Structure formats: structure tokens, C-alpha cells
Length: 189
Image (cartoon, rainbow, N blue to C red; front, side):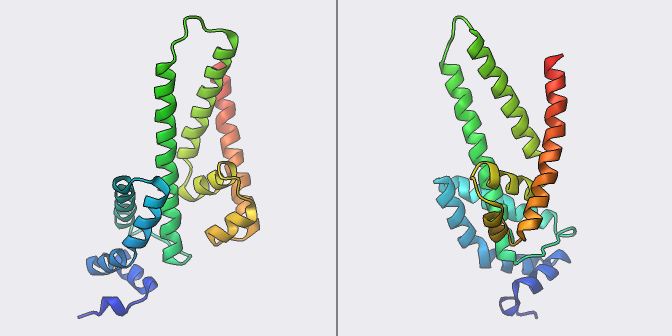
């Protein structure tokens, strides 16, 4: 019988990537409280935080055969939780904006209102494109653009070099720019 509590996270990950349910259970039991606390602190809603934590662990289990964790597992989990929290908060913001726009009834759309609607549509398209990026790239982009973090701060948070963060942002911006150009062309025609 294996003594799972004595294994390191790296050993447990190797086992659970091979399909070992007990190793996965040990990883879950070892980390769920910490990531739940983090998610609850950020979302200010324990039920939402529980859903986020559950989604992250379900995702880990589903992707176990392809999982490649090169950093410390705890950091990987926190980054995954951050990404899901950002996604949740963005959905809440979009929902709130939609509710606010439903409350405001304009009889006449003047030019400034139309410009705002066009800008909002562009912003929604950008959000959709960011949502389609790989998790890590989307998280780095959001940390830089939405949270105003520097390349150095992101590197420290993600366990990457400043140069790697910069390269990732350059690729992400190039992808987003191409997508926005396509959107603008279809929008203008």
C-alpha cells in the first residue's frame, strides 16, 4: 500500500497523470482549502469560490494525460484559480453592464450614444478573443492590461523571466490585433 501523504506534490502529480485516483485525492485534500480561501477572498462569494475550485480540479482530472506542470504545483493552482476568478469577474461585469443598459432607455440615439455602442461592441469582441487565448496567455494579458502589472511583477507572480513575459505579450497582442482587424473590417462593411 502506498503512503500518499508522504509523497511530494511532484510525485503525486506523476501518479495522478497516470490515472491514480488516490494520488489525485491526496493532491485535492492537500490544496483545496488554500485555493478556496483565495477564490473566496477575490470573489467575495463562497458558493462561487467553491464552484471555481471544483472546476479547476475537474479540469485537472480531465486533462491529466496531457498535463505538463513545469512550475511548483501550488503556483500552478493559484494561477488557474486567478484565471477562473478573472473570468467570473468579467462575466459579472458584462452582466452588470447589460443590466444597466437595459435600465437606460433612450428615445433618440445621438451620435455619441452610437459611438459608445460601437466601442462597447469592439470591447466585447476583444473580450471574446481574450477568452479564446490559451489560459496562461490570457492571464498574462489580463494581469498586464487590467491589473496594470509590469512585466517584472507578472514574471515574479507566474514564475517566468521578464523576457518570457514580454515575448508572450508580444505574441498575444499580435494575435489580438489580427483578430480585431478582421472584426473591424467586417464591422465597417
